[in-house]
Amino acid sequence: MALLALEAVQTDIGQFHILQDVSLAVPEGGVTVLLGRNGAGKTTTLKTIMGLTPAKAGAVTFRGSDIARMAPHQIARLGLGYVPEDRGVFTQLSVEENLRVAARGRDLRRKDRRLDKVFELFPDLRTAWKRRAGNLSGGQQQMLAVARGLINENALLLIDEPSKGLAPVVVEHLAAALRQIAKQATVLLVEQNFALAAAIGDHYSIIDDGRTVRQGEMTDLIKDAELKQKYLGVAS
Ligand SMILES: Nc1ncnc2c1ncn2[C@@H]1O[C@H](COP(=O)(O)OP(=O)(O)O)[C@@H](O)[C@H]1O
Ligand SMILES: [Mg+2]
Image 1 (cartoon, rainbow, N blue to C red):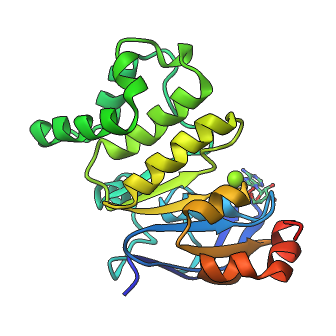
Image 2 (image 1 turned 90 degrees about the horizontal axis):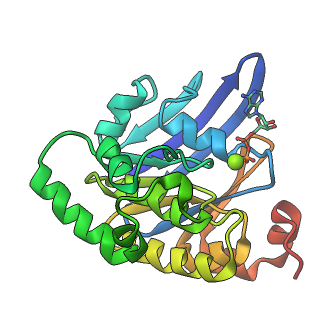
């Protein structure tokens, strides 16, 4: 059984039919990459999973239970972490305050162990502990955004385009951290940078114009020049 499954999901935003037919199976463990052109519906898919733009039809199941009609805070409490495209860090707050706000208020000692994990993956956040998030570099803000998802015992992390606008060396650091994270949690990653997606993805799913067009193993997609060209604009 997949950890998370979407079946024939449709989502409207206002009067617009954004997701028309999205089906997605995220196996437990590793990294599943959600791919597709700009405007294909990747962000809306993540928001639909989190209940932020609820599905109007279709099924969303997590560990076999229907979550499609649950409120975002209830979904989060099941162990789903969401790292939004705009990062969602509070620029006026310090790194410490951002993580305290993100931590769901239970089991603080466990939280401290989570913090050790965060520092191990992102040493910059220890150094910048008391600094305002707004004064961090773009890469450090992205690390903080991911750290907010790690501070709780999440089984599934949804991460939307973390590499956007970052320098290659920072992207490499982030990629290594995501691989580490995926050893203990499942990651559903939206990523436009195909080289990065190919390097860290185990499974893939492609969305085009609000519909799922293909999913499978990343190793198969890497070999499929036609598929990459057609939906991702990746030249062979
Ligand atoms: N709040 C909104 N109101 C109207 N249209 C929206 C809104 N959010 C997204 N869309 C549209 O939905 C489509 C999918 O958007 P999105 O999920 O952000 O795509 P992606 O993340 O793949 O780039 C796009 O055509 C976008 O313009
Ligand atoms: Mg998007």
